[in-house]
Length: 418
Image (cartoon, rainbow, N blue to C red; front, top):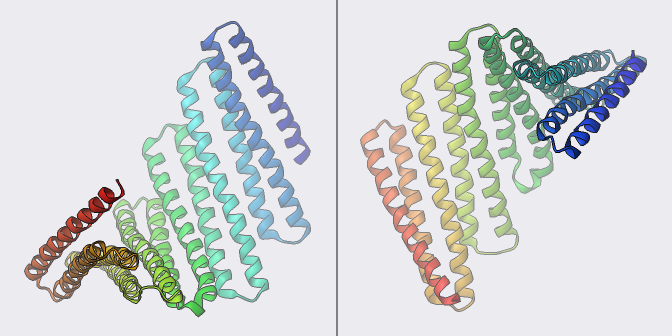
Protein backbone atom coordinates (compact mmCIF):
# COMPACT_ATOMS: atom_id res chain seq x y z
CA UNK A 1 0.00 0.00 0.00
CA UNK A 2 2.85 2.36 0.83
CA UNK A 3 4.45 1.79 -2.59
CA UNK A 4 1.06 2.36 -4.21
CA UNK A 5 0.72 5.70 -2.43
CA UNK A 6 4.17 6.83 -3.57
CA UNK A 7 3.25 5.80 -7.11
CA UNK A 8 0.03 7.84 -6.96
CA UNK A 9 2.03 10.78 -5.62
CA UNK A 10 4.38 10.60 -8.60
CA UNK A 11 1.44 10.50 -11.04
CA UNK A 12 -0.16 13.49 -9.34
CA UNK A 13 3.07 15.46 -9.59
CA UNK A 14 3.23 14.65 -13.32
CA UNK A 15 -0.31 15.93 -13.77
CA UNK A 16 0.58 19.08 -11.88
CA UNK A 17 3.59 19.66 -14.14
CA UNK A 18 1.35 19.28 -17.20
CA UNK A 19 -1.14 21.83 -15.90
CA UNK A 20 1.66 24.32 -15.24
CA UNK A 21 3.01 23.67 -18.77
CA UNK A 22 -0.40 24.49 -20.23
CA UNK A 23 -0.60 27.62 -18.08
CA UNK A 24 2.78 28.70 -19.52
CA UNK A 25 1.52 28.09 -23.08
CA UNK A 26 -1.57 30.17 -22.40
CA UNK A 27 0.63 32.93 -20.99
CA UNK A 28 2.69 33.03 -24.17
CA UNK A 29 -0.45 33.25 -26.30
CA UNK A 30 -1.79 36.08 -24.10
CA UNK A 31 -4.86 34.12 -22.97
CA UNK A 32 -5.22 35.26 -19.35
CA UNK A 33 -8.43 33.30 -18.76
CA UNK A 34 -6.70 30.06 -19.75
CA UNK A 35 -3.70 30.91 -17.59
CA UNK A 36 -5.98 31.27 -14.57
CA UNK A 37 -7.87 28.09 -15.50
CA UNK A 38 -4.74 25.90 -15.65
CA UNK A 39 -3.08 27.54 -12.62
CA UNK A 40 -6.09 26.76 -10.44
CA UNK A 41 -6.08 23.16 -11.65
CA UNK A 42 -2.36 22.93 -10.87
CA UNK A 43 -2.81 24.39 -7.38
CA UNK A 44 -5.41 21.82 -6.34
CA UNK A 45 -3.31 19.04 -7.94
CA UNK A 46 -0.33 20.15 -5.86
CA UNK A 47 -2.44 19.90 -2.72
CA UNK A 48 -3.55 16.42 -3.73
CA UNK A 49 0.04 15.31 -4.35
CA UNK A 50 1.18 16.79 -1.03
CA UNK A 51 -1.63 14.94 0.78
CA UNK A 52 -0.70 11.64 -0.90
CA UNK A 53 2.94 12.11 0.08
CA UNK A 54 1.89 12.80 3.69
CA UNK A 55 -0.34 9.70 3.59
CA UNK A 56 2.62 7.57 2.51
CA UNK A 57 4.81 9.01 5.26
CA UNK A 58 2.04 8.44 7.80
CA UNK A 59 1.76 4.82 6.73
CA UNK A 60 5.51 4.40 7.14
CA UNK A 61 5.23 5.78 10.68
CA UNK A 62 2.38 3.35 11.40
CA UNK A 63 4.43 0.41 10.12
CA UNK A 64 7.44 1.39 12.22
CA UNK A 65 5.26 1.78 15.33
CA UNK A 66 3.72 -1.65 14.73
CA UNK A 67 7.17 -3.24 14.48
CA UNK A 68 8.13 -1.57 17.76
CA UNK A 69 4.94 -2.86 19.38
CA UNK A 70 3.58 0.64 19.97
CA UNK A 71 -0.02 -0.03 18.96
CA UNK A 72 -1.43 3.34 20.06
CA UNK A 73 1.02 5.16 17.78
CA UNK A 74 0.38 2.69 14.99
CA UNK A 75 -3.38 3.24 15.21
CA UNK A 76 -3.02 7.03 15.27
CA UNK A 77 -0.67 7.12 12.26
CA UNK A 78 -2.95 4.73 10.37
CA UNK A 79 -5.84 7.15 10.95
CA UNK A 80 -3.62 10.01 9.82
CA UNK A 81 -2.65 8.19 6.61
CA UNK A 82 -6.29 7.36 5.85
CA UNK A 83 -7.34 10.97 6.45
CA UNK A 84 -4.61 12.25 4.16
CA UNK A 85 -5.77 9.90 1.42
CA UNK A 86 -9.31 11.21 1.82
CA UNK A 87 -8.00 14.78 1.66
CA UNK A 88 -6.02 13.96 -1.49
CA UNK A 89 -9.15 12.57 -3.12
CA UNK A 90 -11.12 15.70 -2.27
CA UNK A 91 -8.44 17.90 -3.86
CA UNK A 92 -8.41 15.62 -6.92
CA UNK A 93 -12.15 16.24 -7.24
CA UNK A 94 -11.46 19.98 -7.03
CA UNK A 95 -9.10 19.61 -9.99
CA UNK A 96 -11.69 17.64 -11.99
CA UNK A 97 -14.36 20.26 -11.33
CA UNK A 98 -11.91 23.05 -12.18
CA UNK A 99 -11.06 21.42 -15.53
CA UNK A 100 -14.74 20.98 -16.40
CA UNK A 101 -15.50 24.59 -15.44
CA UNK A 102 -18.01 23.64 -12.75
CA UNK A 103 -17.52 26.43 -10.20
CA UNK A 104 -20.24 25.13 -7.87
CA UNK A 105 -18.50 21.76 -7.57
CA UNK A 106 -15.12 23.43 -7.22
CA UNK A 107 -16.37 25.37 -4.22
CA UNK A 108 -18.06 22.32 -2.67
CA UNK A 109 -15.03 20.02 -2.94
CA UNK A 110 -12.57 22.78 -2.02
CA UNK A 111 -14.34 23.43 1.30
CA UNK A 112 -14.54 19.71 2.04
CA UNK A 113 -10.84 19.29 1.23
CA UNK A 114 -9.82 22.19 3.46
CA UNK A 115 -11.90 20.85 6.36
CA UNK A 116 -10.39 17.40 5.90
CA UNK A 117 -6.88 18.86 5.87
CA UNK A 118 -7.60 20.76 9.11
CA UNK A 119 -8.69 17.49 10.65
CA UNK A 120 -5.58 15.61 9.67
CA UNK A 121 -3.40 18.39 11.06
CA UNK A 122 -5.12 17.81 14.41
CA UNK A 123 -4.19 14.13 14.17
CA UNK A 124 -0.55 15.09 13.68
CA UNK A 125 -0.78 17.29 16.79
CA UNK A 126 -2.27 14.32 18.62
CA UNK A 127 0.72 12.20 17.59
CA UNK A 128 3.13 14.81 18.99
CA UNK A 129 1.18 14.92 22.26
CA UNK A 130 1.19 11.13 22.45
CA UNK A 131 4.96 11.14 21.98
CA UNK A 132 5.28 13.51 24.95
CA UNK A 133 2.99 11.23 26.95
CA UNK A 134 5.35 8.32 26.38
CA UNK A 135 8.41 10.41 27.28
CA UNK A 136 6.74 11.53 30.54
CA UNK A 137 5.87 7.93 31.45
CA UNK A 138 9.47 6.86 30.85
CA UNK A 139 10.62 9.60 33.24
CA UNK A 140 8.03 8.52 35.80
CA UNK A 141 6.22 11.86 35.60
CA UNK A 142 2.64 10.61 35.65
CA UNK A 143 0.98 14.03 36.08
CA UNK A 144 2.65 15.26 32.87
CA UNK A 145 1.78 12.02 31.14
CA UNK A 146 -1.88 12.41 32.06
CA UNK A 147 -1.98 15.99 30.74
CA UNK A 148 -0.37 15.08 27.42
CA UNK A 149 -2.62 12.03 27.10
CA UNK A 150 -5.70 14.21 27.55
CA UNK A 151 -4.26 16.66 25.01
CA UNK A 152 -3.84 13.89 22.46
CA UNK A 153 -7.42 12.72 23.05
CA UNK A 154 -8.83 16.22 22.49
CA UNK A 155 -6.84 16.68 19.29
CA UNK A 156 -8.29 13.39 18.03
CA UNK A 157 -11.79 14.55 18.97
CA UNK A 158 -11.23 17.75 17.01
CA UNK A 159 -9.96 15.74 14.03
CA UNK A 160 -13.06 13.55 14.05
CA UNK A 161 -15.33 16.59 14.20
CA UNK A 162 -13.49 18.13 11.25
CA UNK A 163 -14.02 14.92 9.30
CA UNK A 164 -17.75 15.23 9.96
CA UNK A 165 -17.66 18.86 8.84
CA UNK A 166 -16.23 17.67 5.51
CA UNK A 167 -18.97 15.01 5.21
CA UNK A 168 -21.70 17.56 5.93
CA UNK A 169 -20.17 19.97 3.42
CA UNK A 170 -20.31 17.34 0.67
CA UNK A 171 -23.93 16.51 1.46
CA UNK A 172 -24.86 20.20 1.39
CA UNK A 173 -26.10 20.26 4.99
CA UNK A 174 -25.10 23.75 6.16
CA UNK A 175 -26.64 23.34 9.62
CA UNK A 176 -24.53 20.23 10.26
CA UNK A 177 -21.45 21.96 8.89
CA UNK A 178 -21.91 24.74 11.43
CA UNK A 179 -22.62 22.31 14.28
CA UNK A 180 -19.56 20.16 13.71
CA UNK A 181 -17.36 23.21 13.16
CA UNK A 182 -18.33 24.49 16.60
CA UNK A 183 -17.62 21.08 18.11
CA UNK A 184 -14.25 20.91 16.31
CA UNK A 185 -13.25 24.39 17.42
CA UNK A 186 -14.21 23.70 21.05
CA UNK A 187 -12.25 20.44 21.13
CA UNK A 188 -9.29 22.24 19.55
CA UNK A 189 -9.48 24.97 22.22
CA UNK A 190 -9.58 22.26 24.90
CA UNK A 191 -6.45 20.63 23.46
CA UNK A 192 -4.64 23.96 23.24
CA UNK A 193 -5.53 24.78 26.86
CA UNK A 194 -4.24 21.41 28.06
CA UNK A 195 -1.04 21.94 26.09
CA UNK A 196 -0.60 25.35 27.72
CA UNK A 197 -1.22 23.82 31.16
CA UNK A 198 1.56 21.29 30.58
CA UNK A 199 3.94 24.06 29.48
CA UNK A 200 3.18 26.11 32.61
CA UNK A 201 3.81 23.10 34.82
CA UNK A 202 7.25 22.87 33.20
CA UNK A 203 7.81 26.56 34.00
CA UNK A 204 7.01 25.96 37.67
CA UNK A 205 10.25 24.03 38.03
CA UNK A 206 12.29 26.43 35.93
CA UNK A 207 11.15 29.62 37.70
CA UNK A 208 10.70 28.44 41.30
CA UNK A 209 13.88 30.14 42.55
CA UNK A 210 12.67 33.46 41.18
CA UNK A 211 9.31 33.35 42.93
CA UNK A 212 7.20 32.49 39.91
CA UNK A 213 6.11 29.03 41.03
CA UNK A 214 2.80 30.14 42.55
CA UNK A 215 1.84 32.22 39.51
CA UNK A 216 2.65 29.51 36.97
CA UNK A 217 0.82 26.93 39.09
CA UNK A 218 -2.26 29.17 39.00
CA UNK A 219 -1.90 29.49 35.23
CA UNK A 220 -1.63 25.74 34.79
CA UNK A 221 -4.72 25.15 36.93
CA UNK A 222 -6.67 27.84 35.08
CA UNK A 223 -5.83 26.33 31.70
CA UNK A 224 -6.98 22.91 32.90
CA UNK A 225 -10.30 24.40 34.03
CA UNK A 226 -10.72 26.05 30.63
CA UNK A 227 -9.88 22.82 28.86
CA UNK A 228 -12.66 21.05 30.72
CA UNK A 229 -15.17 23.81 29.86
CA UNK A 230 -14.26 23.62 26.18
CA UNK A 231 -14.47 19.81 26.29
CA UNK A 232 -17.99 20.03 27.70
CA UNK A 233 -18.93 22.56 25.01
CA UNK A 234 -17.66 20.21 22.29
CA UNK A 235 -19.54 17.31 23.84
CA UNK A 236 -22.77 19.33 23.98
CA UNK A 237 -22.44 20.50 20.36
CA UNK A 238 -21.89 16.89 19.30
CA UNK A 239 -25.04 15.75 21.12
CA UNK A 240 -27.05 18.62 19.55
CA UNK A 241 -27.63 20.35 22.88
CA UNK A 242 -27.03 23.90 21.66
CA UNK A 243 -28.22 25.69 24.80
CA UNK A 244 -25.83 23.75 27.03
CA UNK A 245 -23.03 24.05 24.47
CA UNK A 246 -23.35 27.83 24.27
CA UNK A 247 -23.37 27.99 28.07
CA UNK A 248 -20.10 26.05 28.38
CA UNK A 249 -18.57 28.09 25.57
CA UNK A 250 -19.39 31.29 27.46
CA UNK A 251 -17.92 29.87 30.66
CA UNK A 252 -14.77 28.95 28.75
CA UNK A 253 -14.53 32.47 27.33
CA UNK A 254 -14.71 33.92 30.85
CA UNK A 255 -11.89 31.60 31.86
CA UNK A 256 -9.85 32.67 28.81
CA UNK A 257 -9.89 36.25 30.14
CA UNK A 258 -8.35 34.92 33.34
CA UNK A 259 -5.53 33.28 31.33
CA UNK A 260 -4.71 36.61 29.76
CA UNK A 261 -4.69 38.42 33.11
CA UNK A 262 -2.33 35.82 34.55
CA UNK A 263 -0.07 36.33 31.53
CA UNK A 264 -0.05 40.08 32.21
CA UNK A 265 0.68 39.34 35.87
CA UNK A 266 3.70 37.32 34.78
CA UNK A 267 4.99 40.17 32.61
CA UNK A 268 4.59 42.67 35.48
CA UNK A 269 6.36 40.30 37.86
CA UNK A 270 9.23 39.91 35.38
CA UNK A 271 9.64 43.71 35.36
CA UNK A 272 9.50 43.91 39.15
CA UNK A 273 12.16 41.20 39.37
CA UNK A 274 14.36 43.00 36.86
CA UNK A 275 14.12 46.30 38.78
CA UNK A 276 14.95 44.57 42.08
CA UNK A 277 17.76 42.47 40.61
CA UNK A 278 19.58 45.41 39.09
CA UNK A 279 18.91 47.64 42.12
CA UNK A 280 17.08 50.13 39.96
CA UNK A 281 14.26 52.33 41.26
CA UNK A 282 12.69 50.70 44.34
CA UNK A 283 9.40 52.53 43.83
CA UNK A 284 9.14 51.23 40.27
CA UNK A 285 9.70 47.63 41.40
CA UNK A 286 6.95 48.04 44.02
CA UNK A 287 4.52 49.37 41.42
CA UNK A 288 5.18 46.46 39.08
CA UNK A 289 4.70 44.04 41.98
CA UNK A 290 1.38 45.70 42.86
CA UNK A 291 0.35 45.48 39.22
CA UNK A 292 1.17 41.76 39.14
CA UNK A 293 -0.93 41.21 42.28
CA UNK A 294 -3.81 43.19 40.80
CA UNK A 295 -3.79 41.18 37.58
CA UNK A 296 -3.84 37.98 39.62
CA UNK A 297 -6.84 39.28 41.53
CA UNK A 298 -8.56 40.03 38.23
CA UNK A 299 -7.86 36.46 37.10
CA UNK A 300 -9.39 35.09 40.30
CA UNK A 301 -12.50 37.25 39.94
CA UNK A 302 -12.85 36.13 36.32
CA UNK A 303 -12.61 32.50 37.42
CA UNK A 304 -15.38 33.11 39.97
CA UNK A 305 -17.51 34.76 37.27
CA UNK A 306 -17.05 31.64 35.13
CA UNK A 307 -18.14 29.40 38.02
CA UNK A 308 -21.20 31.60 38.65
CA UNK A 309 -22.15 31.50 34.98
CA UNK A 310 -21.90 27.71 34.91
CA UNK A 311 -24.36 27.54 37.80
CA UNK A 312 -26.72 30.07 36.19
CA UNK A 313 -26.27 32.73 38.88
CA UNK A 314 -26.51 35.94 36.84
CA UNK A 315 -26.29 38.23 39.88
CA UNK A 316 -22.98 36.71 40.94
CA UNK A 317 -21.71 36.75 37.35
CA UNK A 318 -22.29 40.52 37.20
CA UNK A 319 -20.70 41.07 40.60
CA UNK A 320 -17.50 39.12 39.89
CA UNK A 321 -17.25 40.37 36.31
CA UNK A 322 -17.41 43.99 37.49
CA UNK A 323 -14.78 43.29 40.15
CA UNK A 324 -12.53 41.74 37.48
CA UNK A 325 -12.96 44.78 35.23
CA UNK A 326 -12.06 47.13 38.09
CA UNK A 327 -9.00 45.04 38.94
CA UNK A 328 -7.77 45.09 35.33
CA UNK A 329 -8.28 48.87 35.09
CA UNK A 330 -6.41 49.34 38.38
CA UNK A 331 -3.53 47.17 37.19
CA UNK A 332 -3.30 49.12 33.94
CA UNK A 333 -3.05 52.38 35.91
CA UNK A 334 -0.27 50.87 38.01
CA UNK A 335 1.54 49.86 34.81
CA UNK A 336 1.31 53.46 33.60
CA UNK A 337 2.46 54.74 36.99
CA UNK A 338 5.53 52.50 36.90
CA UNK A 339 6.43 53.67 33.39
CA UNK A 340 5.97 57.34 34.37
CA UNK A 341 8.11 56.88 37.50
CA UNK A 342 10.86 55.29 35.39
CA UNK A 343 10.86 58.39 33.18
CA UNK A 344 10.87 60.67 36.21
CA UNK A 345 13.88 58.85 37.65
CA UNK A 346 15.74 59.03 34.33
CA UNK A 347 15.02 62.76 33.98
CA UNK A 348 16.19 63.54 37.52
CA UNK A 349 19.37 61.49 36.97
CA UNK A 350 20.13 63.72 33.98
CA UNK A 351 19.57 66.82 36.09
CA UNK A 352 16.33 67.70 34.30
CA UNK A 353 14.25 68.48 37.38
CA UNK A 354 11.27 70.05 35.56
CA UNK A 355 10.76 66.89 33.51
CA UNK A 356 11.30 64.76 36.59
CA UNK A 357 8.67 66.67 38.52
CA UNK A 358 6.12 66.45 35.68
CA UNK A 359 6.60 62.69 35.28
CA UNK A 360 6.43 62.24 39.08
CA UNK A 361 3.09 64.05 39.14
CA UNK A 362 1.90 61.82 36.30
CA UNK A 363 2.90 58.69 38.24
CA UNK A 364 1.13 59.98 41.36
CA UNK A 365 -2.09 60.60 39.43
CA UNK A 366 -2.03 57.14 37.92
CA UNK A 367 -1.53 55.65 41.38
CA UNK A 368 -4.47 57.69 42.68
CA UNK A 369 -6.63 56.29 39.89
CA UNK A 370 -5.47 52.76 40.73
CA UNK A 371 -6.34 53.30 44.39
CA UNK A 372 -9.89 54.39 43.50
CA UNK A 373 -10.30 51.21 41.44
CA UNK A 374 -9.02 49.14 44.38
CA UNK A 375 -11.63 50.70 46.67
CA UNK A 376 -14.29 50.20 43.99
CA UNK A 377 -13.55 46.47 44.06
CA UNK A 378 -14.07 46.33 47.84
CA UNK A 379 -17.44 48.10 47.78
CA UNK A 380 -18.56 46.23 44.64
CA UNK A 381 -17.96 42.90 46.37
CA UNK A 382 -19.81 44.12 49.46
CA UNK A 383 -22.84 44.78 47.28
CA UNK A 384 -22.73 48.58 47.29
CA UNK A 385 -23.18 49.22 43.55
CA UNK A 386 -23.87 52.96 43.91
CA UNK A 387 -20.64 53.66 45.82
CA UNK A 388 -18.69 51.42 43.43
CA UNK A 389 -20.00 53.44 40.50
CA UNK A 390 -18.97 56.70 42.20
CA UNK A 391 -15.47 55.37 42.88
CA UNK A 392 -15.22 54.25 39.25
CA UNK A 393 -15.98 57.82 38.14
CA UNK A 394 -13.31 59.16 40.51
CA UNK A 395 -10.84 56.62 39.15
CA UNK A 396 -11.62 57.64 35.59
CA UNK A 397 -11.25 61.32 36.47
CA UNK A 398 -7.84 60.73 38.09
CA UNK A 399 -6.82 58.67 35.08
CA UNK A 400 -7.79 61.46 32.71
CA UNK A 401 -5.73 63.92 34.76
CA UNK A 402 -2.75 61.55 34.57
CA UNK A 403 -3.15 61.25 30.80
CA UNK A 404 -3.25 65.04 30.45
CA UNK A 405 -0.03 65.36 32.47
CA UNK A 406 1.57 62.59 30.40
CA UNK A 407 0.64 64.37 27.17
CA UNK A 408 2.06 67.62 28.56
CA UNK A 409 5.35 65.89 29.43
CA UNK A 410 5.61 64.26 25.99
CA UNK A 411 4.90 67.54 24.19
CA UNK A 412 7.49 69.35 26.34
CA UNK A 413 10.06 66.66 25.51
CA UNK A 414 9.26 66.91 21.82
CA UNK A 415 9.67 70.71 21.86
CA UNK A 416 13.05 70.41 23.63
CA UNK A 417 14.29 67.88 21.07
CA UNK A 418 13.14 70.10 18.22
